[in-house]
Image (cartoon, rainbow, N blue to C red):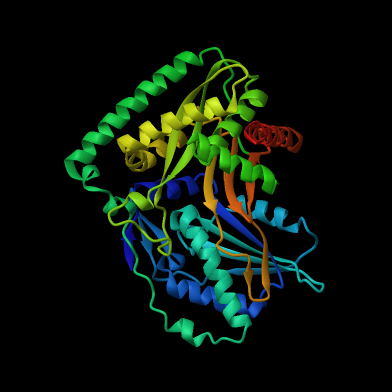
Length: 436
């Protein structure tokens, strides 16, 4: 089995040749499954999902997924030392690169707890080419449902009878007609012109102002925080009332915090990266059960004022994002992602943005799987020295908003990262109180 990588997949693969570019998901559970059950799970997953059984082959400037000769999914098992053990394990996974030319592009770690509750963590690490946030959410449910069945006495045989899913082509094959052929080239050309204009204006308006440093190296460190149910409910209600998506409100919060503590709150433009899920807009729309990288990285520039108001900034971001998505920029951004990352790594002369935030929405449909109970779900994505200064992957679970923050130890220490995180919390709690 051999399949050529698309532009976004190539961007992710070439990133891995310079820095680790992994996504790490942590399932914190009580009454976790046995090690033997997890081994059976990995066999099933590799049988069911073709992208979990591939490595990458490079031929000159072209990349291919290849299944032949790919090893089994590795499983590391360790005794859980304490309640924070998973954080150290997650950081290690974020900073440990994949050998993409050997594969597979996914690995599992299981921290087994002792005691009556058997508090444990299942840590799934994958190289970003094979999975996005939507398929990652599907994977979590699939993992726990499988473990529930086997731990309840079910047989692995019925899972072996499940047909493997087909290996789908890259996202470009599913683009709507307006973004295929000659029309795609025209849209991409116009998008490139707008990006060049934005770059010129950004450089002119930031001349003489702080420029984010680029360090020779840096390790990713994580900082998880959780908003209360009351704050979460109030923000969701207010967002609906104001017709501003929660995604754009959260983006405003991280930008305001970075603006205040990294850029001294001065009047200037700042850039942020958001991810756009392409699956609903494809032809046909793609179900979450099909693993793959079906999203786009969207770069936006926002004019920041002194003492901005979060709802006003969220409205400005909302208008900016709406106009961009209406034009179909998400497809163009996907197509130009490989060229962008080549430029970033060739020159290493600028940071991609001040901040990046990806909101995945509700990440799990349920909490209980037989005897297993899901306590928390966290997810992080690697960053690198030319990436944004402050990043977060945000999800909704059990009526809480989870901020899964990642920073580089070359950019800041834990104390400064915590100050920015606390600022985000304060901004959002104040926004919730204003509308309650």
